[in-house]
Structure formats: C-alpha cells, structure tokens
Length: 299
Image 1 (cartoon, rainbow, N blue to C red):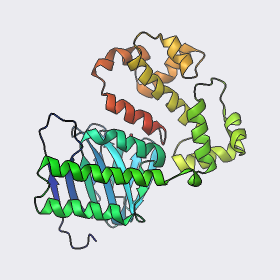
Image 2 (cartoon, rainbow, N blue to C red):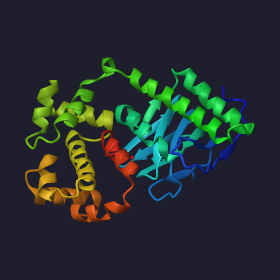
Image 3 (cartoon, rainbow, N blue to C red):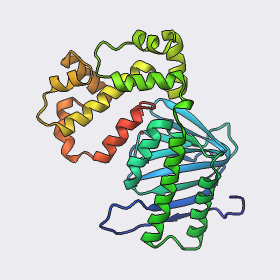
Image 4 (tube, rainbow, N blue to C red):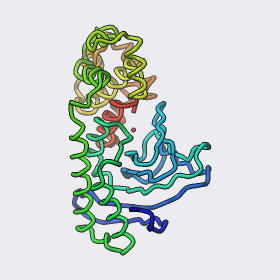
C-alpha cells in the first residue's frame, strides 16, 4: 500500500476561530541513520502524533517505560511530553508514515490511550491504513490545503480510530486489566494495598507485580501513586477553595504532610506552588497527564 510513495514531509497551518481538529503535518520516511532521535519534553511544536511502522523497528520511551515499534504497530503521542523515540542500534532501518494533528484532538487521543496505551496494532484494520494512505496521496496532490476538507478527513479518521478502540471490549480484559480498573475505582481508599489488590483478582502479590509491570510498564503501587497525584492536580486547579488537607484525604492520603512529600517528589514542586501556577496551566495537558498515568507513569 505504501511501497510506491515518495519520501516527503508536508506541513499545514490554518487560521480559524473554531476549535477544529486538523491534520497539521504528514510524512513518509525510511530512517537508517542512528542519530535519528526525538526528545519531546521541551519541544515547542504542540501537536498529537501517530507514527505507523511499515518495516524495520524503532523504540519509544515514555518516562521509565520502553516500547519496541515493529511493522504493523503505531504509537500515539502528545507533544510536548516526557517521551523519546529513536532508531535503536539493533535496527538497520525504520520505515514509517506519520500524521500530526492539532491539539484539539487530544481528548480523543486520551480516550484511546487510557484503554490501549501508547502503542496500538493497526495490522488488522485495513480501513484505517487505507485512510492513512489516502491522507498522504491527497497531501502529495495538494488536496488538503482547504481547512474544511482537511477537518472532515481528520474527524472521519479519528472516529474510526475510536471505533477500533471500542472494539477492545471486556472480553479482552486480562486479570491485570481488572486490577488496573480496581485501582482506578478505589484509589481514594487510604487502606488500599498490594495484598488487597492481589486478593481481588486471585493472584499472589508477586505475580501481580510481575504481570502488571510487564503489561503496563509500571508497578501497581507506583501506578496508584501516580493516579492519586494526577487526580490531586486536577482538584488543585478546579477547586481553589479546597485545603491541601482536604485534597490529600480525597485522593487517599490520611497524612497531608506525606501527601505533600509525594507530590513534590513526582512534580518537583509543592501542591501550593502548583496551585499558584495553575493560572498558566494548559487544561488539555492536565487531561492528558491524568490519562497517561493510567498506563505508564505516563505522556
């Protein structure tokens, strides 16, 4: 499907008063130089990226989790974020097609990310691959410069991608998926511990920790900690009259001093400082950070 395409990168920039999802960039590349490396934490070009591997392999790291991207797989990423993707030394090449979308797509990306994580397989969804090829063909023929045509195709693609997401139903849930859901529903319980979680799904705590880390790239208790702090961030921004003690209790910490210590270890600043800076905080980024923690740290 992609074999006859020329290697090229194309950018778009639209001016509109409407918060529309648009394709802002697309490209087809075959990387053989091992200096190829994108560190995304301090990038200034805000966008959402989908990068689909055609052959070879690349590596994506998000915080402390590492993913190998092989043929048929794609990764979803919000930029800027604490992530890095590159051509590893053990790979001779990485051929891929990438799509960059405007930040307005972030809530949809988060919904998929929250359920499937940053890496998805598209090999069994030829209709999505056809749409990606169609994007590139139209880009090569200068047919995506109209904001209305561009937006219509972008929305169609993301709606179909959501359908793919919803197809990943409860029948595919593993016991570690169930453990993750249990954590998300009970994180405010200050008595929650690894023994309780393991008992809930019928695993030993050793086996739970091993399988949870293998599937999600993070331990259950670290995931719980990140989930609590991410929720606290939202509460600090959206509830300016709540005391730090009230927020700590609301996310599962009986001791607000310990909560402040954990918060500073993860965020680098105290809850009070975070609240004072919240006037400059990007709300969409907050949503992304919360969803990201549900998989790795995570985004």
